[in-house]
Length: 434
Image (cartoon, rainbow, N blue to C red; front, side):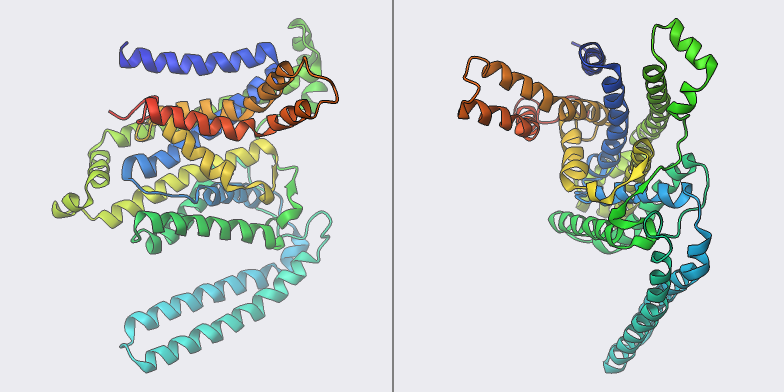
């Protein structure tokens, strides 16, 4: 079988599974799997840029995805004038003072000669700047969070179209990645993994606890959408008439149409990012990145700035994850910081890259669709299987109840089995790097 035929066959199988879901279950479920598969494929592309191109072991994917979600709130929601009037300027002033303190400390460390005097001045600036920052920042936060905390308690956003939040989410994640990379990319791969995981947890902790930013664990709901609302479509006479000609009731037709529009938007973004990643892979820059990945010492001997190139690819991959995070929050219509878990937004994305084929962009896309399909469908299929196996047992059988209850764990078991099978029989992934 040729390489092209193999790729087409694998994508056809995944597409067939999604279509089968629509036929056997519902087209709403199939479209939801498709939409989340598109977003997952974009996340997998971001991780593949870092690991497949440069060998960077980033275990903080969750943090960059969450920053993309935060960007959706900060860009698309309406500003809250009362919050800005009462404490918004204090929050901004406090953050500026904190940044100035760090900048001043950095200059002192770089410009002053090493010795006791530099240590004393550095401590004085850091301690004084900290108390000054807290003195301005804390009253502003208290004032903002006191404004209608049941439905607001935050500064709101800029009130811009939600589609603008997607590139802004990428920029926000890229900025965080640059700050992290400047300090962490000099570490060995295992220490880099620990550092990125810890920083991701810090990002989530900030989002959960800083209510003034995005309401913390109280969540932000009702985010603007780039597609029509179902209720508006159901109230449209022309739409209801078109739905009737297709034999669909308005409620089902509106839901399917909205999800189809989302799928179109997500597919356009995926194709653009995939095309850019492919162009980068086959460019001189891409060949240089793979040379650095394979042998850093030899690349340095040829005059390549390895740390700088690592920073470039780390920022680019994180930006892609940030865009995907903004898209996912837009699809959900809400930001819920408590749902960002490493299992879902780091481990699962890594499984997608490994199963699809590390270093191969098409492989990452395939892995994104396949693993997400399994992640969604294994639990209901496992429950059906357990009910079938135990159909001959008594209703009050303890073994029967135990087996049915264990269906909830089929999802994790299946991910492990799939990963082991791929590593055993196709260790370079389903579509390996050439």
